[in-house]
Amino acid sequence: MDHSIDSILVPTDGSEGAEPGIRHGIGLAADVGADLHTLSVVDSVEINPSLSRIEAESDPKGLFEARATRATDAVAELAESHLDGAVTTAVEWGRPFKSITEYARANEIDLIVMGTHGRSGLKRFVLGSVAEKVLRTTSVPVLLVPPQASVDGVEVEYSEILLPTDGSEAAETAVDWGLTLADIYDGTVHSIYSVDTARFAGEGGMMVLFDALEETGQAALDSIRKRAHDAGIGVTAELGTGPPARVIGSYSEDHEVDLIVMGTHGRSGLDRYLIGSVTESVVRHAAVPVCCVPMEQV
Image (cartoon, rainbow, N blue to C red; front, top):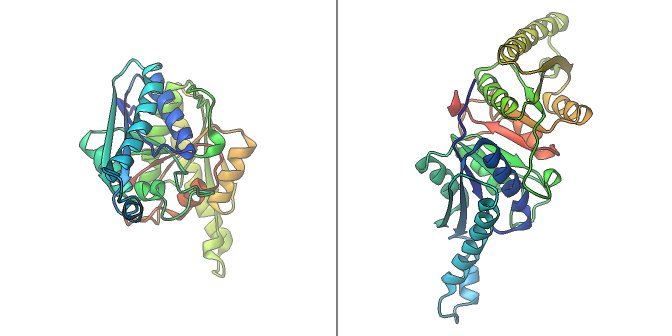
């Protein structure tokens, strides 16, 4: 069950949208005693038009690098007042999602924590955003923090943790991470399996299909109950009915969940570069942080 969290990467672009991820990342690093890395990437593609507009400056590229450095220095200043571990800052040039993914791999990062909104000011997590591209390409779990989950300080509390499952291996790995975080925060685990027959609409034997899915769900939930009990973690588990993303969202709101932990892929997810549709929908609409565990963890 135990996943050691020794190093956490907090990307920043200096925007207000990055702030929730920064504060959650620092808070989590403080709680587990992890080292913190903060990285700001100057987008080498998007700045080209800006460079042409300020070409009269003696060092136009230096302006962008200075802004990135100020962003990482601000994170480091906040982190150093709360952490016992080391704080490392880095500024790189390139495509942000590629630089973040490569930095995480090169520095053996255990967890990436980032906001779902960046400098572009997007109203919600959308395809094409840096966060979404990192989620598609990294082999490291990513904790995505929406604006609604922002905290005033850096103290975070994940006392109610929701672990959706579809019984797949990817979901089991996410359960490992969920149990680890529940143990760290002395939290309670909620697990849910959604019986969704919509994809079989028009086929005969619907009751037989429903019963089969229900049986699969109960087996998956029983497995989580046992693992949680063996770890001394409080657990509740129940079957839901309907589209999984909708069921997960409703459960999260109704039970005041603090954190959702789920795999980036479910039973239908095979391509590394495709996020499972359920995970994508949950991340788009969740008002709480979502820890997404990639298939490569399996």
